[in-house]
Image 1 (cartoon, rainbow, N blue to C red):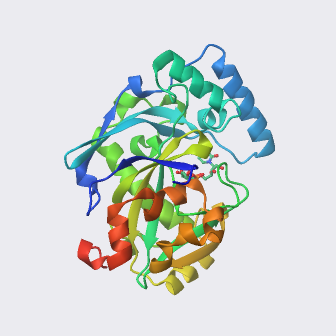
Image 2: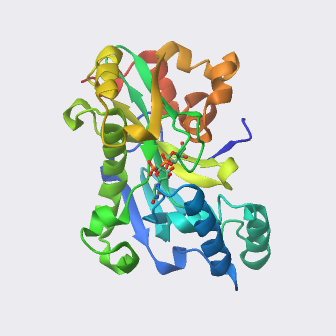
Length: 303
Ligand code: UPG
């Protein structure tokens, strides 16, 4: 398997998991562990990153501690973290050292890392293509590489008008958090690709992939069917949505070619780890692999 990614969890096949089969458990025990002096280091990294990229903002995020499959349902074990801690731990030069320390102190390489949960989706158009975006040079992770639409679920979207720094785990209803995980991926597709929500199916969760180039931070990977053709999607993309600045161009790959992406080389080298993680060949997602081989009709996802 490509060393840039690893599979944390595969959803049961062949149907993947719908929102109704997913739960969330929230606890401060799932938050990042603090090292003495660690916060000063994170503050310094953040200041340096903001000087270089003044558009960065410190949004709160869900921290993925672990995830458990039990029969046909999946539980996300979540704490809270933020984008600043992500850049100061997972994305920082000392990430390896933090992983070593975590292993030594807690038997958990990720204990001192922010580990914000990301989301990504393989978006399948009406004429049997998948949607990829070339990321802008301004984004914090994987700049300039080819990605699938994605982002992060936001605790702020669950609590509404509370300032980011006052969000508390006990104020987040568990099923609302699950709803936000599934809604966030649709919101990202709408805002990055400029697709209306009624053209998108309910997301099917395929699994969770870890990006090893960001010290193993995890993204939930989904499959979403779109009722528009690639030509119609392209027209909408060219008009531009609220997050149009996060990508510079749109790329469509035919269903049968997605299956052989890793073997054909050139495009694979340009894919960012989260897009590789959602690809069936590496993700071994039987759901997506099935769709890629047979089309979406058998899953009841034809729109
Ligand atoms: N950003 C901030 N603060 C935040 C969130 C985002 O400054 O709190 C900026 C940052 O530059 C980031 C950009 O906005 O890069 C876009 O953010 P967002 O759309 O939330 O996430 P992405 O960076 O696009 O991350 C996605 C997925 C992740 C995947 C990554 C690369 O979260 O799972 O690994 O894309 O494919």
